[in-house]
Image 1 (cartoon, rainbow, N blue to C red):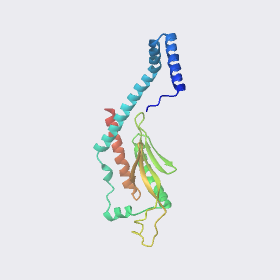
Image 2: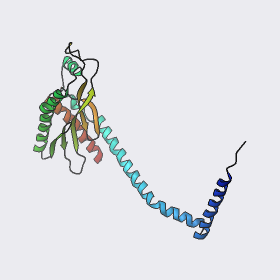
Image 3: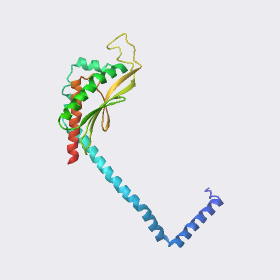
Image 4: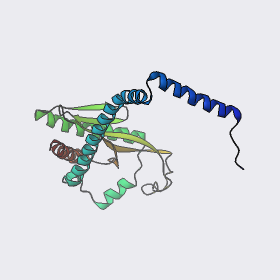
Length: 220
């Protein structure tokens, strides 16, 4: 059957209810309690309203970003035309740390510096930053959102396949590295290792074109 609460719990509940009733009687009744509750909650109402405005603005910006990426012409293909054998070789290549460092120094840095120099010659401010895991190009837009294109080196566990495609006597590497593109909103999950300077520059311009399209939508 149903077990009733222990005696001490019933006494506690009754005492608590009596204490609440006494406080209400002394403080002016239920109306005073309601007024105190409203006065306490009023500041949080403004906080919630501001949070809602921020959420709506963030959703509008995100929608504009996605729309800009979908509508802007994809010119990243320009300058990246390679034969299918070159593409296959790049897919089966798993660079080590030294190869990746050479790629960053000999290809990524010079390519980003060329873009920064051309942007600076057009009276816009651009700078190349060398980070601990790669290189970044930042184009400053004053009060509007800056453009950031960075190449980060990412360490991964070596695969058990593909390493014999170029050298049958080679053993599977324990680690290999990817040169992944990151924008201001985060990683783009694609690897640019093996690109030439010209191909990398066109990839930067493609992403910058999408960014400019996004800013145009955001202004409207």
